[in-house]
Length: 89
Image (cartoon, rainbow, N blue to C red; front, side, top):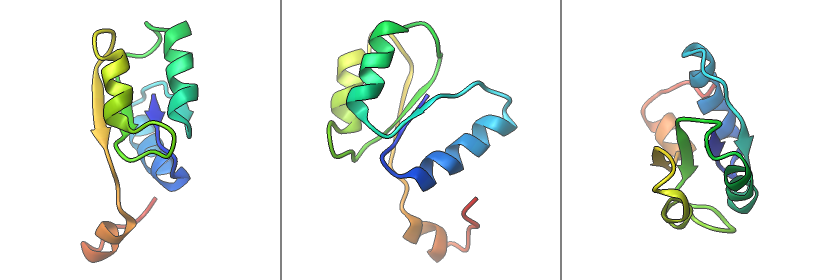
């Protein structure tokens, strides 16, 4: 599961999941994602939360579910891709 308010980041990370052939669901709201996790706690084995979110940041979201799931906190900056000559997928 990918939780990020930036649709470009979701698209980028989804492409990685596709390469790995991993099922994915994405949310642009931490609160909606947490509600989904509460109802489906065993659906995914990996959850990626954007650290900086408008409704509830990734750290706070992770604290709410840390005993149930594996969590990766991330925050992508488009400027980083441009500075390092990465291609945004």
